[in-house]
Amino acid sequence: MKHTHYRNFKESTRHLFRIYTMIPFSILIVLFLAFTIINGRMNLTQKTTEAAQSISQSISGVYQQYYEEINRMAVSPTVIDYVSSHLGSEQVYSAFYDFNNQQKVKSIFHIVNTDGVFLASSAPADSLYSNFAFGNLIHRIDQRPGDTLTEMNSFRYSHDRDTSYTFGKAIVKDKRTIGYIIYQLYESDIQKVIFKQNNEIAMITDEHNTIIATTSNVTKGVLNKFSPKVDNKGHVLLNEGKYYMYAKRIPDTPIQVITLNSYKSEQYTYYTVSFFVLAASLLLWVLIQFLANKMSTRNSESIDKLIHALAQLREGNFNGYVDIQTNDEFQILGDEYNVMLDRLKELIEKNKELSELRTIIEVKQLQSQFHPHFIFNVLETLRYAIKIDANQAQDIVLILSRLLRYSIGHDRNVQLKNDMNYVRDYLKLQQIRFNDRLEYRITVAEETLDVYVPKLLLQPIIENAIKYGYENQSDVLIEINIYTSTGKLILEVRDNGQGMSEQTLQEVNQILQSQTNTTQHIGLYNVHRRLVLLYGEESGIHIDSAQGKGTCVALTIPYEWSEYHV
Image (cartoon, rainbow, N blue to C red):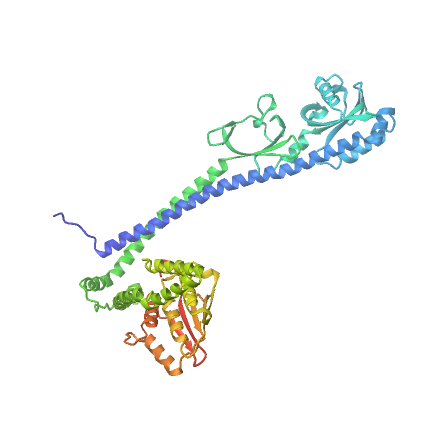
């Protein structure tokens, strides 16, 4: 037979300490690296998105201001009179400069008549007279005189000042085009607006992906279009680098804002974190080795006592208590082991009693659920109902069949709402039997309906209420109230019978608290003892009664119990 080698306790403790210390540390490292990666990616995404949002708001404001201004100037009486009469140029220029000086993005201003003659301009327009592109611009405005032309186009003026975006509008008088007004926005000013300190590359493009302005020329492709390469992970490839890109379309405009940030900064963070984790791991391994040796040496002194005690327990000796006086966790373990022995012996006794009691209860339930006398009474009532009231007879048969079907079910624990349906059927049959002499009221809190309780829990209580309620009186009222209080489920059965004398009540309570019962109060005792064994001493039956004032029997069980605990 192959011999199995076992480590001694000291070796095992040292080995397990190293393993179980490294497991959470390894998990922590993985989580830390994952957090670093996710956090770096989120920061990259966030700053790219925030830059696009900020630029979008700024460009949207610039676009809206110029759009509103060109539409205002195109219908301005001052401009129309100037184009018609060539008078009042100072007012036209004054209006333009008042507006232009307030803008973050400056522009060049032109007014051209239908013959292509520049009537007003804020920059030398000599080079534009024969400019084919400018002529096409005028032609596009003339094609749709009712619309405002907004488009990307580039024109170079003196001092290397370039414009990159144009607003154009026809000047109409008496439904006839008499000229054109044009605003051309400086590219350098737009670049200042889209430059964000926390963002690497930003640009704005038109609906055809033509670049209007950018903070980096690496984004410009053929015909000044932005058409980047994208790898299979969605990374934008620019200038041999990988970038995260975010694009935002500005509402009600043909312009979109694009921001890009490189993954290089993220990689530098990974390298730094990896170096830190490696250094911390080496330091921690040395510390774990030292602590493992220290702990295993100290704890090996108490383990022999525990092994000996466990051997006695395995042989069935429940009196093999352990005595450890080390003033550390092993002393606590030894004390808890002793407590466990006491608890184990107590549970064995309780289980034995519960098993015996459960057998008695099940036999008692089969005998008492539908006592022959009760069935005889129901059948007698049914016999008379068949002759007098066929509908009532049908109800009796249906209710009795439900009761029989429910009583023979094998479920020991049921939801409270199902058991209460049984209670209502049972009371309804009793009410048919006693007519107006029996009245009952049931109140159940909504939150208790789905709680699981022992099956037929209330039946013995209700039987007693009916049995003793009619002594010395002809009418009986039974009230059933179910509710929760301070984490407990309370089930009350109250009757208006003659009640108990103080001496009788005291005797019944003594029977309920005893470990054995040889009296005739089997039903109440069995219910009480069953609840105590299942849920503890705080559960069970409490009886409140006074001579001539009726009796209230209250059952208490934990409220937060599921089907499997009941």
